[in-house]
Amino acid sequence: MKRILTCSLAVSLAILVPATPFADQDMGSLSGRAASDANQPYADYVVQLRDPSTGEVTSKSRLDAMGLFTFAGVPLSRRLLVELLHVPTNKVVCTKGPYMLTLNASARSDITINCGANRVVGGR
Image 1: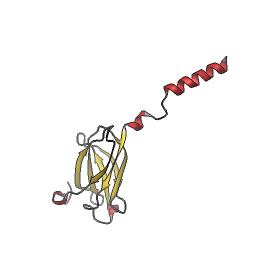
Image 2: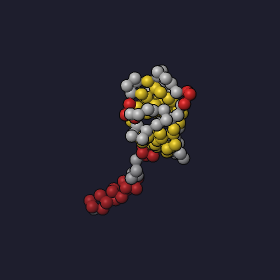
Image 3: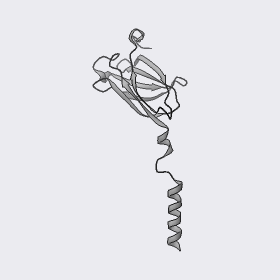
């Protein structure tokens, strides 16, 4: 009797508890290139995600050797600015966006940080 009860409970839990947590489904990714507005060495730059409504920096990513950046675990349905930050001066060089990921478009890999004439010299 004890064995039947244990098996029944295990089967019930397996049916009710999903294998993939819901939290992972509410995340996406942003990636792109900042080489046109960043000068080598790219190690002097990070790209950060900022919530324009709160001013909160939610995440930072260093540029790789080719000036590329990637953010994983980006929350869906949240508007975020993508900012290029010059680390030695702690100044934002360029801002793009805001971008917002959704369930239907949870990844974006085409972001190019290219402010050209709008580039912030000396930061803000």
